[in-house]
Image (cartoon, rainbow, N blue to C red; front, side, top):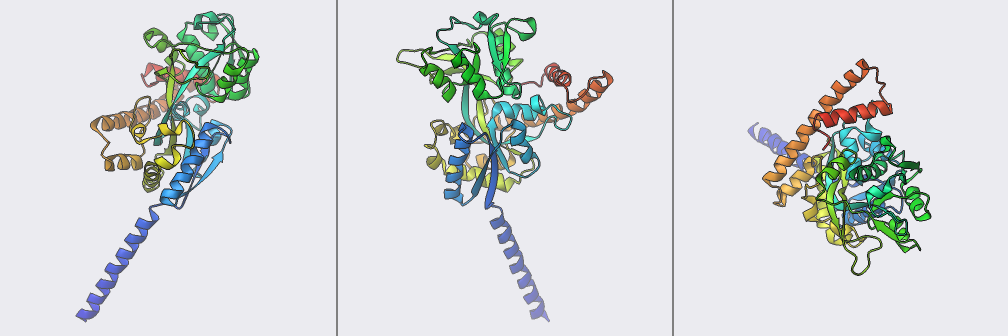
Length: 385
């Protein structure tokens, strides 16, 4: 009888080891999906290059799915249909703060997480070199391109104009609407508008610089504190930056100051930690494979992953685990993480209060009036940045 019992125990122990082993093996996903901007965009090229490296290093296949709008990129992730999305820190800010396209009653502040803190995106405002417009103040009475379907594209124009003391509601300038980011940028080259914003090394400003008109970038002086405060009221996701690489730069041309925020890979807070950890680990180990796929991908390195500047969103638990393993998680990171988690809770609580107040004030949700009301509530609560 004793031998029989010991045999059963031994079999049970072996079974537990097999189950445990199977769980460990199951921790690494075989396949993940990530939404991105359209084919040909930086983000699509980034994700494709990273996907190749991750598959070579860890055997994880990545399906890259292009989507035309921010909601189209984020909604599948929220629904659990994809694990990741790759969008800028500006879009991440809108999602995490429940503003812009995500101010509707079915959205509000969302618990997104950084699955990888990517390289910095330098964004400047520019005009044609022969426009006669040299400073933001010279834009008074001129035409600014906006994209109604993209709060980021529009606010990244309105913010710098506010930096120069110019406001649309005061009639300081006129806006011309375009259906897309590319169309708005093309309008500058064609002279249909006088100012727009773009990544400083993007193809659109490159085309403007190569045209007969040339390109002129506006300097957003980092010493102008009041100007930056006015800009942040429209573009709170932006940090100050000195730009040394830009379209139209020639020998002897000086750098100028502009906005900067990161490109990130995002996931939801409830995305399995093992999945995020294994993908981030594969990116860490596959850096030398993907870094040369695009001129900006060298910036998606180990140091950048641990850079919290210009970030207003927590890391995912899987990334925290990786950074701790690599010995780069510090007390500063822990403070940052807890601050972002606390701010997230405050925004979600404020969202409920704001909705109640809006109903009492007869402000209909899912309207521009509600969007502005919510934005003002974030400012008043000190939760905009």
